[in-house]
Image (cartoon, rainbow, N blue to C red; front, side, top):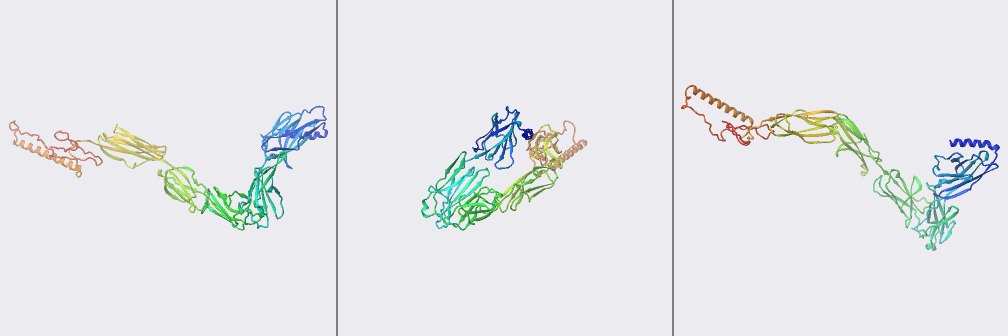
Length: 619
């Protein structure tokens, strides 16, 4: 709204200028100089004349324009009713404007190099008059102390042209500083065949100027004790100041005519993350200093240490042709080159990502890819075992055993230290599968004994196991364990009669049961341990023979009685007496089911209860 209102008022002023009743006079400084980071106050004084009274409406606008030409941009607007700092400019939040009846002042905080522009003050009193003036803002930043570097390896006195003696650099100054050379406190001016000064001015990305000056001088023997230094002069608000470098001494050297550049380390192929050392060597005596650069960026001097260029933690963008040349080879095509190739292996990308859910019986193809500058080999692992080779892994007819984490390892055979890996977690879902559910489990156990029943079920989500016990009141779960796709449960059951135990495994995908049938074997007394070579059939035969003998004996006694051979009177009474039998008379041995350690015990004929390891005698 302020913009449209200002435009409207500006047009109105243009129409009224043909019949202006008064005039306005502006007073501003042509230039204002400040240090970088300081605050700048730009005053704009105005006065109206030709009027009987001060105007009732005054519109003030501040504009900025790059020095020289180009469009200008408004940064502030005010009238009798409002004051607005324009948004989305470099000055939003950094400027303040104060006004009174005599003028207005623009305050710029934290002045930057980019603020070195023309600032326009526009005052519009409508019929009272219109005027505009500008102030050029100049920003100053003193450079760092000058750095001088002499040719420590010396200069040959046999050179017929001036040779490099030293270089001086003044960094990060504004405006551009100047460098002057001195020998033994005497200024050196460029002289053909004797003194040559090469100046390189660099405008940094920050806007500062860096100046590098190289002094070439034709030395004579008497100059061996001379002291050279450079002086940098620079402007500050309202003044010019100077700083001197330290003094250096130079010696002689022989020019270099051939340079060799090679990779010192690492040996063999280079991968991302390595620290590369490039070494440059010339045939000068003694060796000169070298300047390193890339062929792709010949004007960018790489930071080096003597004849060595260290490239820490290289990446693929550091690949290219590297060059080195002697520091004193100005104007000479003496350089060494080496091709540096940085090999890389990007992180492995596994599809599906992170995890994948499958149903039992489904198929899945997983892929693993990693971009590399060299040939790669991919191996798949599960639980440390190799399960596949190549970029793809086929999982067919998934089972619960298929579940788990699959890791793909990508290596570069020609550079084994270059490797990466990725993984995918496979989850196989399905209803419970009880181990051994195909048939009912038949067991036999001596009554009174305790038997442990185990039930294991596979599935995902992990199955829940519950027990249903019929025929025993004394049972409890003694062990339960589970993992992501398996549940195991063990119950202890006391056998008192025939028992039917049902293991019920269930999850959200279904239910499956396993049935245990336990036959209870009655416990009887035994008199002797069973022979390991005799079976239960021998016991049955012995029992049958004993019954036959008793039947025959009864028949004979009945026959004799009928014939009168055996009188029924007291005097002729025949007595059947119980003879005391020994343990060696009749031995009956019985064996239980092979799964049961105890034998079936029989009770002795005379009613005497025998021990479990004793023989039973039947008469």
